[in-house]
Length: 130
Image (cartoon, rainbow, N blue to C red; front, side, top):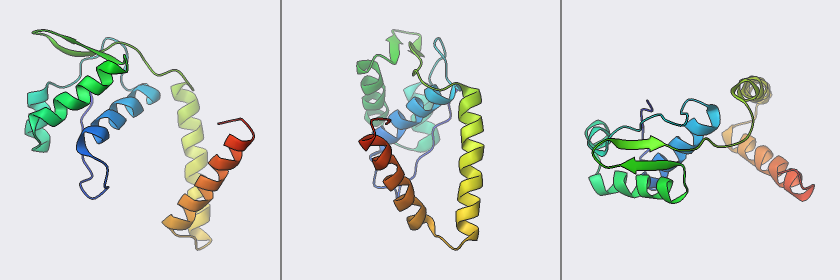
């Protein structure tokens, strides 16, 4: 089961942080079709947030077709997010981590890394890859 966390200083709304975490867990394969999400009450108690925030996130996920609410039972994952396999994610994450470590050792800071990554994504989009 997924355990949600919040970054209250991120500027991203709370409900969107929950939605993004579910999408990420689906991409990484840590959530699979049939898995149950925590109840709204469990999320409210663990994060000290408004129940309507959790319900809004779950409604958004349901609207996207990723989860379904089952009355009296909870909210369950309907579909995974297609893309790379968990093995691909692991391999690519290790390669990216090595790149980050090398960039930090070369004296770049986090903002430099974000800029380089954003430029690389933009280049890929222009090439029709992303």
